[in-house]
Amino acid sequence: MTTYNNLKLNLQEGILTITISRVAKLNALNIETVEEIQTAMQEAYDNDEVKGIIFTGEGDKAFAAGADIGEISQLNEVIGRRFAERGQDIFAMIEESTKPVIAAVNGFALGGGCELAMACHIRVASHNARFGQPEVNLGLIPGYGGTQRLTQLVGKGKAMELMMTGDMITADDALRLGLANHVTTPGMLMEKCLEIMRKITSKAPLAVGMIVDCVNAWYDKEEHGYQTEANSFSRCCGSDDFVEGINAFFQKRKPHFKGN
Image (cartoon, rainbow, N blue to C red; front, side, top):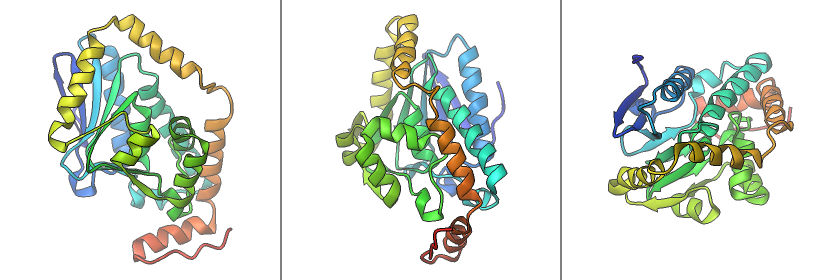
């Protein structure tokens, strides 16, 4: 099995738990971590012993608190497009997996972390979980499929509000909106995920995989939503507002955006 720098993998009873292990960075998704997620998913695809997959974050503060701002700050239009399209492709591996995937959201799921959770088939949150797409604060938009999946899950109006304000919402709000399937205590989070996963993996694997295919087919991905997102993310990376947003973040001040 591959050695990972940022993930911990544990396979028991046919259930592969993938834990993002960057506690000091609140499990932020840097490029290396996203690439490792792709490798882990491919190994899960290829391993007949794996019947289901659970994603979570190490510690009790964060599932994954966004992307690595240091890396984000280096993006321009060309690199930004590749960055978005690469992340979209990797998260599509999760969404399209014919093996069930559950997100155990144990704290902050922000930016790319929220996008990772949304790519999973089911989301179970602890009471202390917080969801959000705060990219607008940096002069950016979600780039790993967030504009598409958040709209699918919570509806157009609420998705617009959450992405345009950058607000965080609680686990209970996420449950009410349909972003989370279940909310439980931190101590019972993994047990709840395992309960659901064991129930699913007791069913016919071929039928479970076809359910994934059929549900995803309702959303016609051959349309231009994801490409529009990548195009727009790229344009944001070339904007003065993006430079201002990044500088304000590192300088710990409020950004002053000018619309260019």
